[in-house]
Amino acid sequence: ADRLQSCLRDSDTIARFGGDEFSILLEGIDDEQTVYVVADRLVESMKQPFDLNDRQVLSSASVGITFSGLRGEGAEELLANADVAMYAAKSQGKGCIETYRPDMRRSLIKRMDLETGLRRAVRDGEFILHYQPIVDVVDGRVTGLEALIRWNDPERGVIPPGEFIPLAEETGLILPMGKWVLEQACAQGSAWRSKYSDFDLKISVNISARQFQQPIFASEVADVLRVTKLAPSSLVLELTESILVQDSSAAVRKIRELKELGVQLALDDFGTGYSSLNYLRAFPIDVLKIDKSFIDGVAKGAEESALARAIVQIGETLSLRTVAEGIESEEQATELRSLGCVEGQGFFFARPLDLDAVESLLEDRVPAASYTA
Ligand code: C2E
Ligand code: MG
Ligand code: MG
Image (cartoon, rainbow, N blue to C red; front, side, top):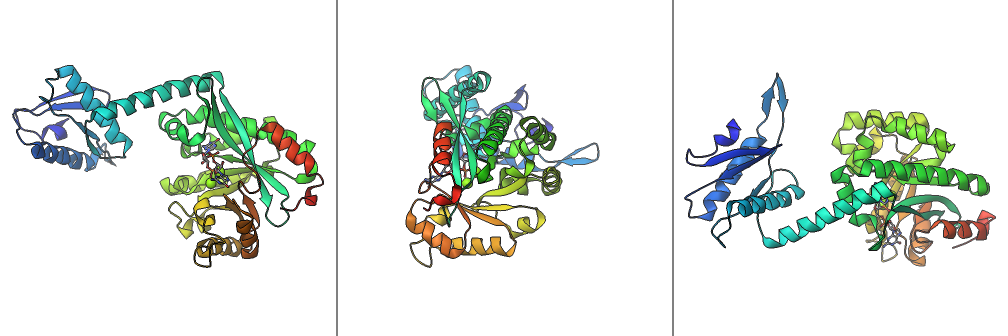
């Protein structure tokens, strides 16, 4: 509060509105630019570390601005508008400044509706899993299945994960959701492994940063494996590079714990994140999943496939399995085979499938090697 106050004039009003929110009223300013100068000053001052009990603590502030006198808004409406603008600023990351626009209110309402729906979905179990086959690109044999969540909303129908995972992460709903995915996928994987034992199927599960960071994550995985009787080496946890950069020493420890359980670790969407090759050395990763954006160019010419080729070579050098994501054509599959990529996944082989479709696929292709893509 002192620090914020030091950025203001005596005639300005500042009040704490609860939690970590403050409201500031700047009066008698006739040029908008001044308001932005003050906002910048506030953001800058909050970025300076705080000394708390001999520890340095870093903080940040997001600022939402609204101007009065546009339509004769009352105090309450002004405060609500500033609040809406602050949420818009927050959603852009730390230390951002946003000015209120009426359309922000609509997107905030949409977001609130989505959040309400998502809470209900977690409570009532409205999620389903589809499984996308991962295949050996040489003979088309199914080597694994990636569990992909969908929200079966009673009103809106099936909603893809891209539309609700980010909000689930922000609100923490990803924790119960992710636990459910892990339990379901391991139970299903365990059943399929006994029913289709000649495939030696691996089950891949996507893990979000928030799940991974929970101190109990590794023991949760261990519990699920025990209850579902899935062999640890048949479970592949798909992590993204952002997990590894966040807090490296804690991440290294967590990864070791998981490796001790015997599970496999895959780096998902490889090449799109921070892609420091150091991670590959520091973390005992088993599988590199080459992001679809690199596969799109494959078979379009030497230049376009150069990066995919390089990633396959990195995998080879470090003895990692490489899985090409998003293979949509026969030409891409052929080219990837010649680049030495071992496994692939994509609409060309199979889309994400419901349980029945997975079973008919596995049944049609027993014995495994009889299918050639
Ligand atoms: P991802 O893990 O990289 O999964 C691959 C995505 O690419 C899937 O989208 C899949 O349907 C899509 N895909 C596969 N082959 C092709 C292809 O040939 N062409 C095209 N255009 N797309 C292809 P989906 O199911 O919409 O999932 C999107 C993302 O949502 C996933 O990306 C993953 O990051 C996240 N996600 C899905 N399920 C879960 C989950 O249970 N937990 C968490 N934390 N994230 C999940
Ligand atoms: Mg994945
Ligand atoms: Mg991916």
